[in-house]
Length: 370
Image 1 (tube, one colour):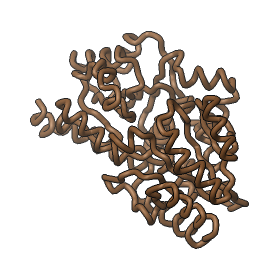
Image 2 (tube, one colour):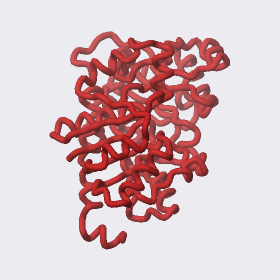
Image 3 (spheres, one colour):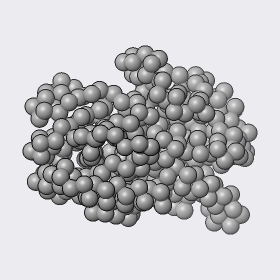
């Protein structure tokens, strides 16, 4: 198939987690022989911030890890919408201009033959529904939502059988255990501070337990204000700045364990949706302990693939166990890898995407949704 994906940025993962998953899926589609084109708007804020902070050198890890991927920038929405009209499949991520969705939808309604899908990987449909209502999706064939609770929102908005759950996953061509084990020590957490969406949770489930367990803690990410940096200093954590996602497997390989602390909105309002770091960490074979989140869709095996702490004291006990029990670390590594390999690779998601497209094109589906 000829496939076009409209992303906020393929080249930059600066505060842009969707790039992780997108790179893996597009690479898998290319490996299967599909003709893939990626488009991103000129001046995308993620890329602009990356270049501002790190210059062109900030793109080196991406380019080295994904030599088969490239994206084209555009400024003229109408022109780029015309350009992809002959594709077989067009996907639009929700961090795009609503005008782009309107232009692509208009061409689909006017007779363009491609399947047109909207891909939502954020909580704005719940946290800022008026923002999402700005998108005219009337010309779209379906919605890809990265969790069942988000899919339910779109069903309530009238999408019915045309909304599909499409979880994120690990790009196991990149995210895998090290070929040769080296020295490991302490904890690592890779994540952005953002708008204090989990500041209290990070203190309760990461900073304080790590200090109490006597474990060194390395923190990677962006958008850490001065107050956040003072908090890290107070707990003895080391702030290491931005980490290219392509470099994350090497960082995981240097540490004994990592921790998952979901953003408050996902834990409370969109349960069942983990951060992509869960998939990536387990794929790298690093033991994981998690703050509370409700795996309502049964994506993993809590207690087997990773440890779950209900409070800070329980997290401290988990971290002490991870520090002292090599058999526990080995078990978590083994079980987490098995679950990823069985269910949660980008190759699995490519299979799902192709099945979704085939279902949307089936005559019986067209009749039901006409």
